[in-house]
Every structure is written in structure tokens, then in C-alpha cells.
Amino acid sequence: MSEHMSIAQALIAAIADAMAEDPMVCLLGSPLGLGPQRMLMNGLREAHPDRVLDPPTCEAGNAALGVGAAMGGARPFVDLSTGSFSFLAFSQIVNEAAVAHYMSNGKVRVPVTYHTLEGVRGGGAPQHSQNVHALFWNASGLEMLAPATPADMYGLARSAIASDNPTFIMGHAKLLGLEGPVPERKAVPIGKADIKRRGRDVTIVAIHLMVHPALAAAEALAKEGIDVEVVDPRTLAPLDEATILSSVAKTGRLVVVDEAPLQGSIASGIAGMVAERGFHSLKAPIQRVARPDAPVAFAAGLEALLVPTAETIAAAVKRTLSTS
Image 1 (cartoon, helix red, strand yellow):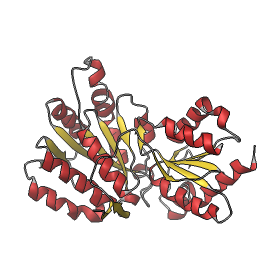
Image 2 (spheres, one colour):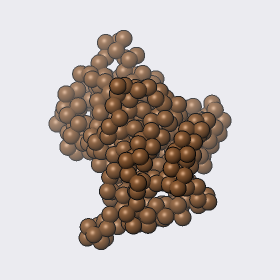
Image 3 (cartoon, rainbow, N blue to C red):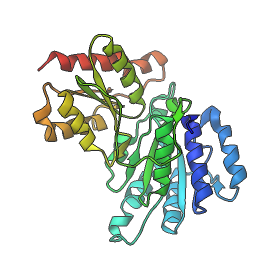
Image 4 (cartoon, one colour):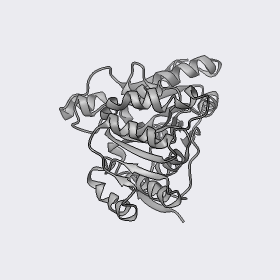
């Protein structure tokens, strides 16, 4: 039976179900950066008081604790709060968790899940508005998930906790309250993209939060007779290149949207992959829509100028349609 949840509720439900099924699942750090929905944590604490731990605020120490616990047989879920705080745990995640399996010749598993809330959240200024997914995307050995709907959050979180690989779930503060159906409480496969809207004229690959303005742009363009396909990778590592290439082969045009700064962004990586492997399908140059390479301003008006919108995405679609 389908349930209606917010993304925050879906994440808590996924952790609760995993903890009920597996006594080795534990939670380090709460209330998961849930903001006004932090009361959702109460049920977890009451059900598993010995497995919901609130260590002192020390991102490096908590990330390292997660690595050690995972190596010892537990399945820890480690919350790192705001995205930029994960910089303090970069070495533990990238230089320990992500490479332990390789460096041990497959003898060591690190089934740890990390979670953070990244992105431009509104008034966060430079230090609390970082999109960290592009930085961690460069770390070989780390699975990376970027769910944009409650159903995907529930399903991908279940897969992350069950995975024997270190996995990073990228949450977004602006998505926490987003509500939607969760048709089934089951895992969503890691490494499989989802076509959120089918179309024939242009492919938009939208990352994370950007799925929603991309869908809004597609709906607006449909009124002008432009049929847009919206692909949500959901999993950034491993990336479902086959689904992206198949969509571009159908439409012949590509717009990639990422809230992160353009330089070194996943938008740039996907554009490069399609240019290399799908060039023969392209009827026009690829368009990238991303944040300028500048710090995020605190002032609301200036902040709004930096973030991709349905309007800037629609303009990129029209640019690629205007050239051939």
C-alpha cells in the first residue's frame, strides 16, 4: 500500500526499518540535520536506545568511528550535519573508508553510510551553502547517492545501509519537507537512474535538488510544444551512463543541471562523458546549467541570482534547440 511521506520521514523510516531487521545497524549522530522535523528522531531513540548514539561534535572523529565500527562488523549510519562540515572528515571518508577494501586486497569490508545536508539552503552564506557532492565524486571506492523524492530517499537509504561498500547519501535542506508517495517500502538499486519524465526533443539530466526545477521547466516548455525528457541519475557513483546515453541517442540534445559550481562539477563530468561516448548522437552543443564559480552570498537577492531555476533551465533548452 502506498504511503505519503516527506523526504525527512522517508529517511527516518528507512533507518528504522533497517534497525528493526538488523541488530548491527546503529546511528551515530542525530537528529540528522532534520531541522523542524527533528522530533521524528524520538521514535528511533525509544525503540533502540542502545543503538542511537550522540557523540560529541567532532566530524573527523565520528567519521573515523564509523569506519572502525564497520570494519568490526557493524553497519553504522553516520550523520555529518551540514555539507561543509564533511570537509573536516574528508580524510577519514576518502583516505580510509573508500580505499580500505582495495588496499586489503578485498579482505576488509567497510559497510558504513554517511549522510549530510548540502547545497544552497537559504541564508547559509558561503560556509553553509557548499555543494560537496562533486568533491566526493572524485573519491574512488565511495558510493554516492543523491535522492530527490521520498520514494528514492527511502529506497536508496535502504540500499546504502545494506551495502558492503562505504556509501554517502547527499541530502538537501530544501528537500526535507518535500512530500510524495512511497509506493513500496523496498530498496532502490544503487547505480540505476530514473527517467522522471519522458520526452523526445531534449534530454535534461538533473542532479539532486535540480530535478524539481527541471521538471517545472519541462512542464512550461511543453506548453510551447517542446517535449523534454528529464533523467534523474539518483546514484552519482556508480553513474548509470547507459540510461543517459540512451536518452541522448533518442533526443539528440542534452542539458545538464547541477547546483554545484560549474568548475569541476558533475554537470561537467556528465557532459564530458556524453561528448566522448555519445558524440555521434548529438545534434547540437551540450548545455550546462550550474552555479557560478563564486561564494554564495548571504543576501537573499544575491543568493537567488546564483542558483539554477526553471527559467534558466528552460533558456538552456531553447539554446540547444536553436543550434544544430
